Image 1 (tube, rainbow, N blue to C red):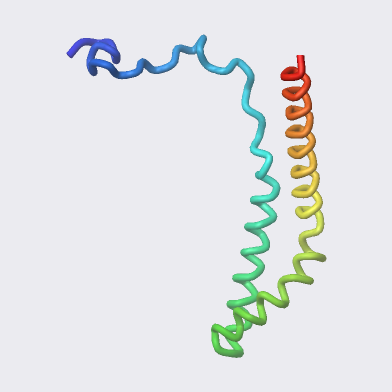
Image 2: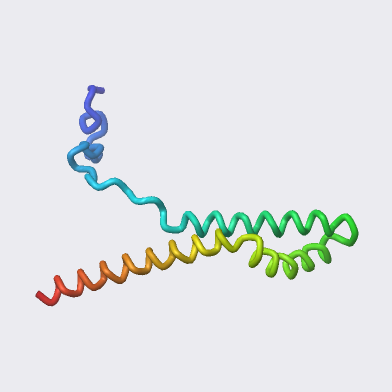
Length: 108
């Protein structure tokens, strides 16, 4: 075996050189605020289930928790919901602009 990756394994692809990599830094994931909001809603659901399970059977507590977390999440997590909505709107706007740019370039 030699020191070069391509020589060590015949026919293997060489790792990309730094010049071959995309020079633009990657933007934060557009789903990140949505992920945070979803995890907070899930945490609220689990918390309500645990509290209600102290007073009733687990399955009944889980069903009540699903119903109760809907309005509670609306009031308690409004700021996170707004951030998720804004993130989704920005992402949709970027996709729409990219689609239009591609459409114009294809038309000539």
